[in-house]
Length: 198
Image 1 (cartoon, rainbow, N blue to C red):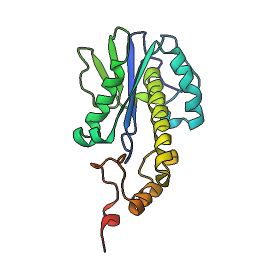
Image 2 (cartoon, rainbow, N blue to C red):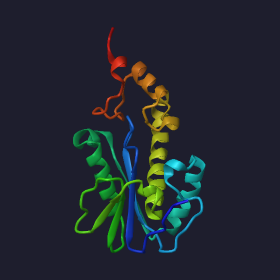
Image 3 (cartoon, one colour):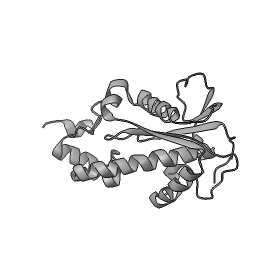
Image 4 (spheres, rainbow, N blue to C red):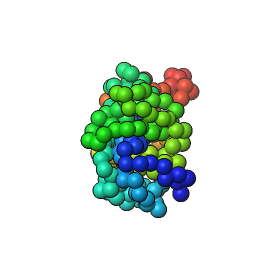
């Protein structure tokens, strides 16, 4: 269970998914929840099964006062780096909110000011604050859906299962087939010992 149900109607929660992936976008969500919103299933998306995340997504979307989701794609990630891309995705998600923004709470320890709205970075915030946990569920499910679509184009990487993360299977496929336009060229796609041509 989340430790604190600390939010009011005008607090934005934001989080991202896919920062450590070798392929696909980094995806962020931002939302404002009603003051009394609770759900017994809700937790940091990494602690939830895929089934629970899919159950929660429509509940969050129906109950949120407003929400936004944004992808930043590999070409942009390679230009500005993954930290800046993650923050940009959060800013673009916040851009979609249609409420008066009073305060932003962000999962993690890095953020850049959004207009003149005060903000706070909270390490492991997705396990502490309901609105960040809900944003983490939206970011993760929207990104997973996107990776499932890419899987149909390049099934040999099995993105439907690994979602672009650096699993052994994904790296073996990169070694065998090379990289695609959806891979992040600025990331180390293979460990050094696998890149040596002996």
